Length: 126
Image (cartoon, rainbow, N blue to C red; front, side, top):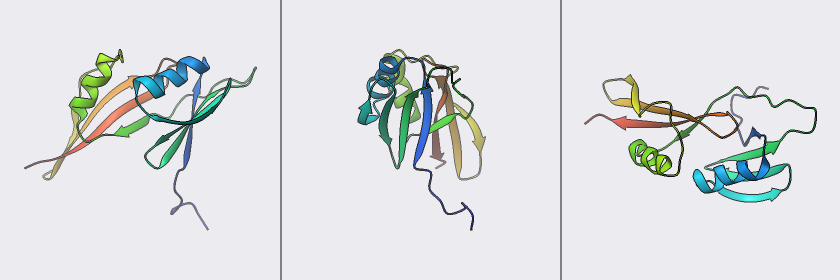
């Protein structure tokens, strides 16, 4: 038995300040808040994956590392909308891969706690 057919159901995103983290993911990114258990945890639904925004217990260091890529249909529209809300991006949306059938577009940003996030879009070539 292995995990090859398992689905990822939840990801932990560590935050330093609970209210600021909730506001960023709920209000800035527009991800649906399922419920919260202040002052440590809030749960959001993003497609089929649940995001747990959590404040680490005292003395436990947050482990930051894996970037989270949000797949969007119109990367330029989402990029513009998030910029209007104050999200600072590392660059403009750009092509990171081309094939005969499609282009993969990417733009990276961080949340207020330094977690690596990105928008990703697959565009078919006409």
